[in-house]
Length: 501
Image 1: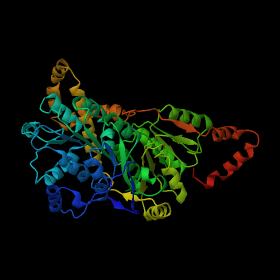
Image 2: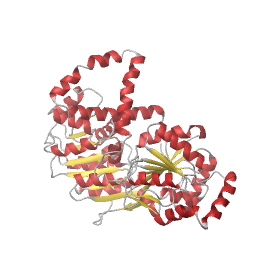
Image 3: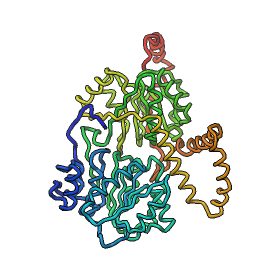
Image 4: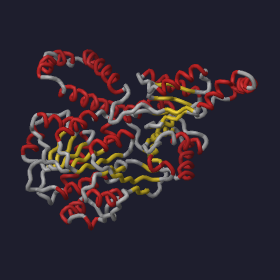
């Protein structure tokens, strides 16, 4: 369960044409009684705020964290609008993973107990039998992953011509997992006249562009805590013992799959080490620190401008003058020793109307004490989450590969599919022993590297707009001549006593 290190009251951002919030008494009795049976005594903040807009049929983006009650926020108005007498699907809920599909479907079954409604749960990686049975019986609401929904459309076991409501749950995660081509393809099969709701924990540029593709008039509702840029940011904390910190960083990158990130270290030696770890795992990463020669620094800067590097590892001093406008993540590998430095680091993301994520790795009590001080001073809510295990990372990688391969299979002609069928016996043979399984693993590792560790594709993907402080760059360039020579010599005399940025 998420644990809050420092908590503030949520700040509510609403559409211009505001509606009064709901209480549990405003929900229709049959749904309300089902909710009470589930243990509800009152609505959660996101439900209070979102229900009046969603029940009015307005196209909405709702920004709310996982575990905030968002499932009920979209299921209640979805149930309210379904006509039980019409047996074709009227509501479609798209989710990124089978686990979330099962969770949403379970809550649908509980909330619809007193209603004469049927649902279908569809997701990849399993057989079609039960899913086909559910669809043939006449599902009013379909809940599933985009790839399997498209599979059923292709098999003509699912028709969405009567759809009136489309829900994207965890839209940012769907894009992160590579579902955008499927989401785009789905537009061909759904009516133009419909209501669309999009729920997302973060609001990066690509989620906003996705909303523009699917919505007629986009309105925004957000519940988040804090001040300054905190209303557009998430501040996450993960336990990371010193000896495991580099591996935990890799796991988080694999789970998050950020578009772009800066990784901040306190010392130059760590910058070089972390950059080498990332390069060794196949990531397009580069480092920048105070020791970097000017020509190398200029080369790195040009690489950032050209979008060649997805990850930049840096110290605070070295990163001055670099402004990446659509940076999605900041990883704080080392907790800073100064309160204000944290704000500068985290403030690198969530710019120009985008949202962002700042992830801090804590290894000891002094790190936690520092974060509590930062939280109190700047009104920041740090949410501590469970560090992902290697097994969870492998499962996520498997899900992404399955999504990608299913998408490629759907794009093949019957002749191409038949040709691939010739290799199924080879696959079966290779899967018989552990040594030969490693040969298949080699192919999958290569496919994953080329597909998912390359720059991501998504809606409205732009080149990074990078602004360098040219004045400071010019000053650094001239540091080797004239009056700058004495400063340079002084810095060399001090170097043995410090390893910082």
